[in-house]
Amino acid sequence: MKKIYIASPLGFSEIGRAFYNSVLIPKVEEIGYEVIDPWVLTDPKIIEVALQARPNTKRRFNLWLKANHIIGRNNADGLIRSDIVLAILDGNDTGTSGEIGAGWAIGKPIIGYLGDFRNFGDNEATKINLQIEYFILNSHGGVITYNLEDLYNELQKRI
Image 1 (cartoon, rainbow, N blue to C red):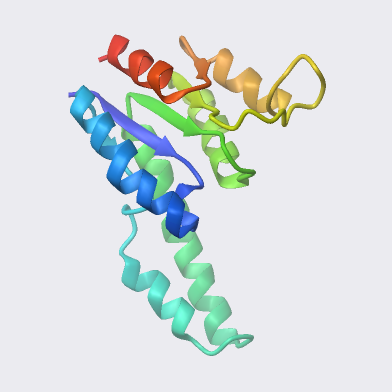
Image 2: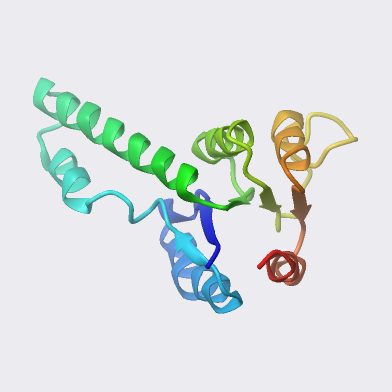
């Protein structure tokens, strides 16, 4: 079974998590992929401990420093284990951008999904950041899709 890493900002908001967990992941699994989900790669207790520490203290800073390293390492390991990267491009998320660049650098095919009809490009020749578009389109068979039907069809073709 092919493994797919899903890079996205959807875990940051309640509505994003609802779509991600009840629509996107089940559909990707139904198509036949094993999902590598960066939102569950790290034990949530590590984040909870940092969140519960008193704000603006050295202890909280150090807890976040440790948590950040663990999260980053877990996500990097997930990218390495994956066969393909699915990048959700809706929203402005530097983490997703970093995962796209890392995926490109280690030779993973990247499928981008941009469902937002607004133009976020650097100029009229691109709908998103030109560097992100370059990494996706110049990955091994990379493509950007603009609706869920095309995304699911593209995933189906690669299984």
